Amino acid sequence: MRLLTHNMLASNARGAVTGYPLKLQVVKWSTKEVEPNPEFLRGMLPKIDWPALVAATQALGLPELLPEAPPTDAELSAEGAAADEGSARRRLHRALLEIHIEEGALVCPDTDRCFPISRGVPNMLLHEDEVRN
Image (cartoon, rainbow, N blue to C red; front, top):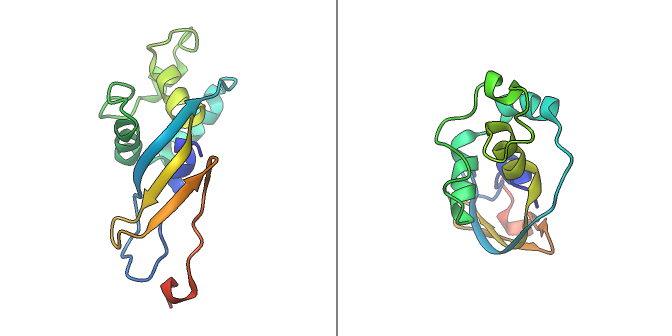
């Protein structure tokens, strides 16, 4: 599961007020290189909950990966930024697309309902008695 996916998921369990952001508990993660796509990053940035993304990188033990504030469009568009490992574009790309949670869990902030992540796939299915009406 990519952190991009984590940023979009919410719990729909009974008792959840917002069910977002899900707390990330990581047992195993890996990185997988992905071809950079600056246009995709610029298009996704307005849809990202930045504090939730920063919290996810901190849960991975990577507090230095992202700054507290999101990058500007100019930082994402900077010439040569893709090659610079420390650039805002490269760090955002790594956080959203290259980090994969292999094993762990997502925990609802409202109900503490645990959704397991196994082989990179989060199981968000609810039991019949857990579904909101």
